[in-house]
Length: 222
Image 1 (cartoon, one colour):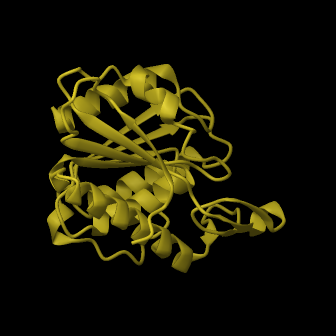
Image 2: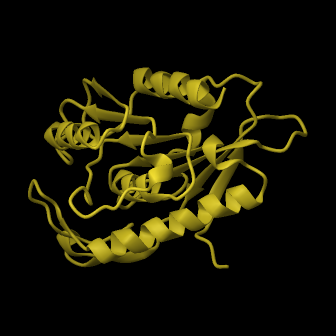
């Protein structure tokens, strides 16, 4: 099996094997190292044995950036509010993340101790992957992103009650907060237990938010 290249970071320092995992997808033009420095800032308890996996997106031409080749989970064709995208590519990326989940399960991590997280483009893939995965997961974290496949997705029964945490910046000029709000409305309409938090920031993360993510992850994995 060919897997996406990933950065891996173990939270604990003892010899225990990880019994929980977080698969965290970066945004357009970034790579798996982007969120690696956040791990020690989350404040997770030392009792948790968590493996963080930060996959690198493949490099593809991106239409909105003049066809420039860069790390991307899918092509964005238009940057209007509805974000015209290549949906086949988002589905293909979702399958690549699904393979990483299966690999963690094969490594001995129960599916319901695996969190899927994503920022911006990575969040759009995280929505598709987590909500359709056929085994129960621990949670979905959607950061400064949008629900790109909300009209076409076929959710799995296994994750129909998946705990979902959506976070957004009030002043995001790249993915307007309106899109985060729309995603939350759709998730609630579909019956998902969803929490929505906003922060006075642009298209980024902030320390207050990182601490809140740590609390949520501890609740999901503790």
